[in-house]
Image (cartoon, rainbow, N blue to C red; front, side, top):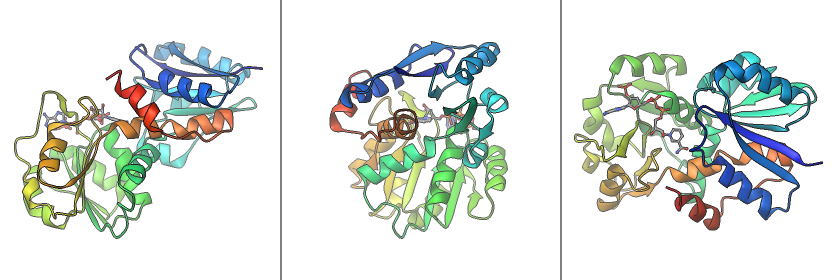
Length: 274
Ligand code: NAP
């Protein structure tokens, strides 16, 4: 019997997930399908009824459903609860379990593109305190990074988010970047700055150690102004496309029983759609 999976969201036409999972289904010769289904929040209970009936093995969840699905899941992984969003559903019998794989995507991307990046990493700077920032804070906590300086345009949001993570995450004013930079081995941009020609005007990347790694969650354009500046300074950089590809791995493995790989061919196929 064909194993059916989906990505749900509203709107959903822009999603690159069908391309990613479709490529893996084909590559592994699996009798499976992965379809994009437009689901409004009000239609979620009906979709969950289909999941519980065994019609689907599971699926991905995107905007604006990542929070509404919490109430419908039979269980939610504690890390997804900390992140405040579920992006992956796995059906087992009549039960639906919710996970968040964004933090794994972030880690998988850096592990592949900058092996050893977290070894001895003591201090990092995270820019942004929105939804994506939470996944990055969980990822850095999972890797035992001792101190994360959290900078956000709206300072109160950074303060509130840092509080939920305990002592290892410290909110700091945006203009302290230059003072914090010399001790930072990693800078992560989790803001939307970099999209649509936008860029930071006031980040003193020159103050970072030469060994620092700069990474961006924005992947359109693939090389954001932040990454271009860091690269010009001779710093290591990793773009955000790999996070999108790697976050898809755990779901695929749970639904189809095969752990897929992020290959140069897959990356090129998705890059061609940017
Ligand atoms: P979000 O919840 O809306 O948060 C947006 C963040 O950007 C906030 O911290 C906001 O600061 C900041 N920001 C917006 N405009 C700014 C500006 N002009 N200057 C400084 N800060 C600014 O969005 P999100 O869900 O966290 O997503 C953020 C970005 O990550 C998006 O571009 C998204 O596409 C990307 N992302 C990529 C992946 C991936 O797989 N690569 C995964 C998730 C997200 P304020 O609080 O001050 O408004």
